[in-house]
Length: 362
Image (cartoon, rainbow, N blue to C red):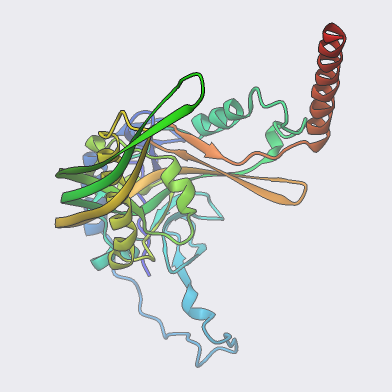
């Protein structure tokens, strides 16, 4: 399988897409180039390549290694054009970097045909931004373990283009609610309660654009939805150069498998929008809900995500940051020693207040 690497026209080193400059950048000579310029340069280099010598094939029949059933199908091997080292990925790896020379590599065959994205949102936030967001997220957390913030706690930070299905559709909805209003009063003998019942109907149309559904089983859907929204007005037509310097996967959850989740997100949003228009009642409950989806359209895009991993006391903690907006989410560990110390302090304070109140009332 082939690997595409974008070379610096000045020094020949590998180019990476710079989230800060929104250009292809060389880390060795510091030169920057527009995406279109690098694309044309790369096409020129490819047209000048010499055909490779066709050697006799070494395959599993002539070799001695035997794979276990199903084991071989999950692996993909690629050759780094810079150093000749082998890059090993799985069936969904579309962009990575060489473990020997650290140059970025894109696997265009993984993105061809049905797997080629329509759009991409380029990274706007850098690796340093992700580190700063992690530290900021930990500030002011009294229950956080004392040494968790040390720099060495961050074991890995990866910029990943995550595959997403984007759903557009129009909706017609008709939703009815059972609602009540309660009025109470009293006289010298009794307390009265009057409950009025209402049947409320709401109908209308809501249009949706770019409802995202994660297309990778590797990513936690809860995290991916928590870092939304993305600014889709900054989305551009897909070019493989945007992947250079980052990891990328192709989808392993197809559009049909993602449709039920998209339908649920759309219906829930419509129901919430309609519910927000029903005001001034003591209780409101849905009686009937009919949300019809029509004129559905699906597109495939790669969206930027920073993934941070750290290990604390044998447990892996994962954090995710929107690579465009910087929105950051993740689960933090708890220092139970600090928790019980804080709880004891509250208990002592509560006991002192209770004793003071009791003394005052006596």
